Image 1 (cartoon, rainbow, N blue to C red):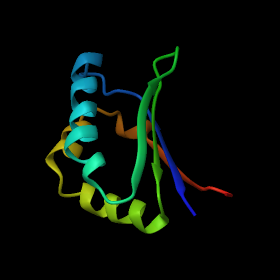
Image 2 (image 1 turned 180 degrees about the horizontal axis):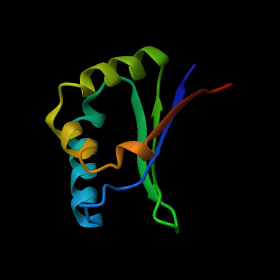
Image 3 (image 1 turned 180 degrees about the vertical axis):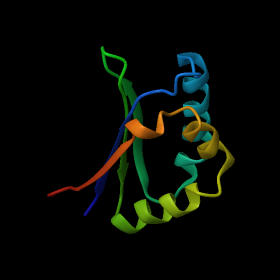
Image 4 (image 1 turned 30 degrees about the vertical axis):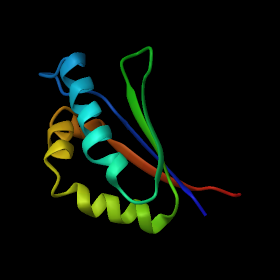
Amino acid sequence: MAVIEIVTFGLAAHVDEAEFLDADRAVQTEFAYHRRGVLRRTTARGVAGQWLVVTLWASPGDADAAAQAAGDDPAVARLTGCLDPSSVVSTRYDTLD
């Protein structure tokens, strides 16, 4: 069973969109797509300034392993510094097919 991980958030007050997008691209190319089991990752912006990242993982174990590895990754740390910590919500969903 695959896992869909959705993270919603707002940007930190000191971060502009260009800085965030640069950090997000670094996570995508330097971290996410090097992880076992990542099938797709995309970032989107809402009309009211909210953001989300959707990642499709091959299995719950792959998602768990990436979450653990993220704690030591400099690209992930840079991206995390761009987010308003009080706005971050992460949710996982198991696919039914």
